[in-house]
Image 1 (cartoon, rainbow, N blue to C red):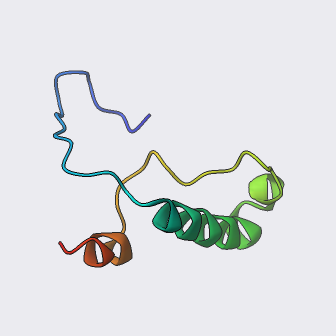
Image 2: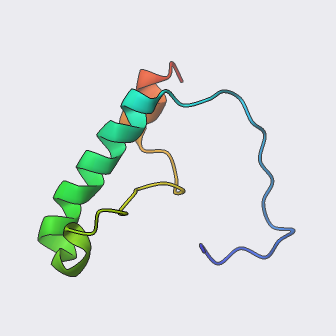
Length: 63
């Protein structure tokens, strides 16, 4: 999705992300979409993740 070859990146699971943060991320993404991608903004299956963690999320999780 982001242009990496399969051997370019690795991941380590650190923790589950609480549902409340997923809901917040979806709301932020939906609000962003209303301005920048209105054709997708009303899609009920619209979710922000998987994607890179934003600063607000990392701070909320204690990073």
